[in-house]
Every structure is written in structure tokens, then in C-alpha cells.
Image 1 (cartoon, rainbow, N blue to C red):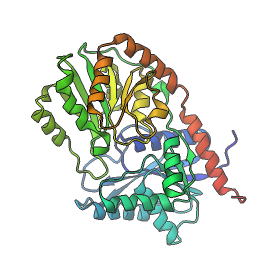
Image 2: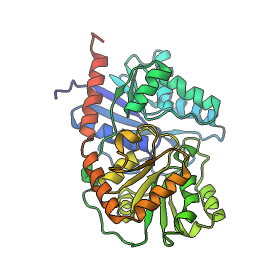
Image 3: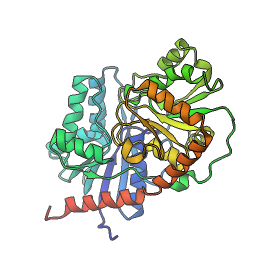
Image 4: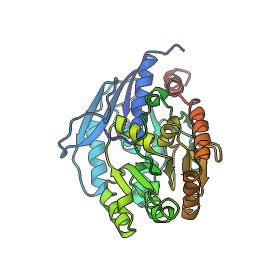
Length: 375
């Protein structure tokens, strides 16, 4: 594939290990691998004493923009957007936002005549936030992007139906080499792993409350949780620790807010099943990672998840909010090593069909179309 030389500014919203951030890092690296000159820009609170770097090393040049943290979400959003409108370099050929904050900043800059280049937005999912003002903010950010990518066919249909917007599907990819050297398992205790966010959309509370029921068949069951606060920044590990204490299962759960890629792979190695009881989901990057590690999945049948996880083949899917069904699916897999092995093997083969190189090629092609005089 011959790539037209172009300069691209990619925007994400954090340096932490979140799905959209991981997507931005991998996509940027693989775009650079096919000759696209990408620089990555992200945000960080000005009141935190942390190194201005991502949760993992990257070959992509990047810049961290500091913003003033405010308890009020609207004020915080304004500060984040302002930081971008001040710091984003002008004169690139393409601008590509991975979230509503970056997308809004680009919209403002274009409206002010500071940018003339085409703007793209990847819609991983559309948060309703349960707050009308934030939902309206999210919707405006979708409406005003020049062109849209989505990570699943499900979200392509949602944008067409609810927003009257066309989009291009650019799935999440997987670098299987990141999961080639899985360490030996450290424990024989049946272990459930959750990798996601603490925001209500992810449904972690369902899993915490199920542990006491699962203990009836598996008294030594463990739940490992890798999760950080959501966009609003108000969802805390302490809340879930309190919930576990009230349910009297605190001794069975360990929480990790920020871990290295090496330690994450270690947790995958120690797990029997990965569970994602989401109320809504774009695609499920953590599910791809689990499948790459040969693990079976239990997840809600929402968003793009059924496009990735084949029910009965790579894992078990349940309806969102069906706590009883979720518990039965987990218990079924924990009790059947052969089913876990078979589904894990199937899932590994499944994700071999998704590569970041393919995602980069789809993305670059759309950049070129936007820059073509005929478009």
C-alpha cells in the first residue's frame, strides 16, 4: 500500500491505561509504521505530580497538555478544551480526536478559523452519562466532526439511525506478540478477572455482589479488578471496596488502579475467566487481550461485544443486567476446565483476524480520501 505523506495530529484524553488511550497509542504507532507522520496529544491534570508520559513506552512523538482540575464537570471540560485549543499545533493535514473533548476542541478551532484541515472522530461508544448536560456535550461532538470512524458495526448503525451520520468501521486491533510470552500461573484458586473502568457503564458492582453466590460452589474463588475512575472522575475504588465489605467478600477481591503491561499480562495468566458485565460497550479491547491470552469470556450482549465474542464458541454472553444469568455463566465455566480450554483456544484463533496494521490502513485510506480534491 502506497501512503500519501501527510502530517496527522491525534488527540486522546489521558495518559492512563484506558481503552481509548490504548487505541490511540496502537493506531498512531501502526500509522507511523506505514509512513504517516503522526504526533499524539493528550491531557493531564496540572495539580498531579506525575511524569508527563503514557502508561507504557511508545515510539510515537507526543505532547502532554496540562489542565486545571475542577470539581464541577462542566468547568473541568471547559478547562480541558481550552488547554487543547491553546496547545494543539496548527498546520497539520489531518486532525483526529478519540473522544468528545478533543473533538469539541477541534470544532472550536475550526469555527474560529484556526484550522482548515479535515477533522476526524473515532466513536468508541456514546456515553449518556446519566446527566443531560454531558449527554448533549457528547452528542454535539459527534454531530460536528467532519468524518467519523467507529469500532463496530453496531455503532455504525447507531450513528446512522440516531444521528443521520455515515461512518467507517475501523475495528480495534491486537498485536499478538504482546501476549506471546504468558508466564506460568501462580495460584490454583479459581480466579475471575475484570479489566475496565469504575464508571457505572461497566457494571462492576454486579460482579462484586455475585462473589458470595459463586463462593457456594467455589469457596476459594478470587476476583481481580483492574479499573480506574471514569471520565467524571467521581467513581472511586473506595466505593467498590465499601460495597465488597458490605457484601462480606472483601477478602476475595483485590483492586488495581494502575499497573504496567507486564503486570496486566501476569493477571491474565492467573485468571480462569475474564468477565465484562457492561451496560454498554463499544467493542471490548480488554476482551481481545483476554482472548489473545487464551481465556474464555463472560460478557453482556451489548454494543459491539457480540461481533467479537461468539456466544458458545469464545465465551458466554448474557443480557445486560441479568445478574442471575451472569452468575450461572461464570459458575459454569469455573466448573468446566475443558469448556474453558476449548473456548480459550477458539478465542485466540478469533482475534488472529484483527490486526492494528489493517486498522491503520483503513484509517490512512480515509485520511487520503478527505484530502483528495474530488472529496
